[in-house]
Image (cartoon, rainbow, N blue to C red; front, side):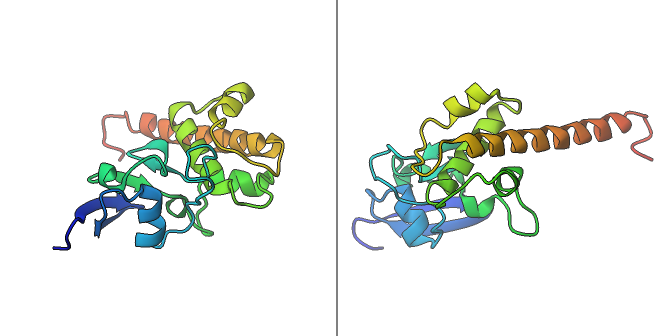
Length: 178
């Protein structure tokens, strides 16, 4: 065992990962430097910009404010875990369809914050979206297309949820879906 290091085990994007880390290592550095997941950006190291936002046990957190050892045993989702080109997450699709990015630096943090927001409220108003995104700074946009992208994602996710409810209701026949 290396002196001063501790073992951290997290499930990142569905894959269980373990590593020996310095106790003071931030989660953002563990993800980027330890695991090579560079979609989580480092913008300020002071928790002001939100570019490093990830989901920790389903909650949006700024990973520059969490020590890797604090995440031990947790589930972490980074922007790389949302979807891929074959199967975009509704938030990714919204950013594509509604032109929700410009330079792209803040985009991973905005997307992860939006996913966290939509987990809590699948039908947010424009004001609630803007309030929910307050912790992520974007210097390129006026947030209009970002808000549209989140609205698009909310509509897609609500539609998807409605389809699941209809399918589940259709299985109430007492015949087990036969």
